[in-house]
Length: 392
Image (cartoon, rainbow, N blue to C red; front, top):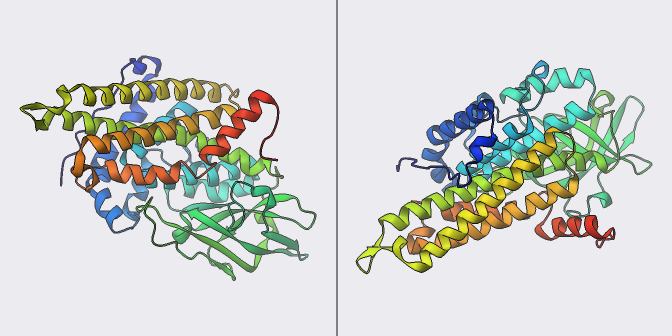
């Protein structure tokens, strides 16, 4: 088992822009990843298994709802702290970060923002510690980029709601205790419902044979005449804007997380280039390899500046959906390019589990698609600057 020798690049001295609390939060998450994730993640990825033993630790480092107020079990941190935690977790593995950001932004966020006080007190403290794990049901077998056309629906049966439908590609589904599910009522209006494991007719079959996010549990949500108590309806927001608001928070976390994956690939390739001798000198002394490394650190630095500014805007309540889309799209694309170039620098060793690069590359092929595909985010930016929605 190789030690985790990761050193975080900070070419533009961006640490100077962080508060002492930011750095303490980040360094705690980084130390935890080095101790608890790095030594085991390759083995779990090879076995296509989620390491459930890390759930408690994720809660302890603020990996679940760090911006949720303290009275609901959260850490009450700001948006830059949230981003830094996601960065450090994804430096370890995108699948682990998926578990964390789904819990934070797609489960805890809607309960906090759209739920009532009873729902907040019932679920959020347990979600914050990892005692309870949640998932988010929006994507359907026939509707991904077009969630407004969802088929999943519920009917008012007097003393309860009757929920029917299916959701697909759901992180955490196989072992989640609750699901925040988006469904249409009889008038076609989208609402959020909290569905609990054990409700009759609710099942969560696991998705197998994935080549990506192998250390993350993915599954479906099946609703066959599920009786949902009326008190489980999220009362404070409805319409497609409700789940999209959750996705804003999650995409923001992804923008930071992708930097972590990119930094790990860059750090691995840099260290390898200094140690690997070919033609009587380190490969890092050659022009082509220096070109790759120089471009990597340039793109990482640009992404760091983009997310830091976005975090400031989030803290001020001024960040727009389109700005978040730009950061998510840019940073994941950047990370994929760096992973591919880093893999080439390592030659054949780059495809082995002895190094993290190929695992990152495969994971990022999912990250570039989920929570808004690469192309859809491009069109969101296009619509924002022209005023014309090209996907309608």
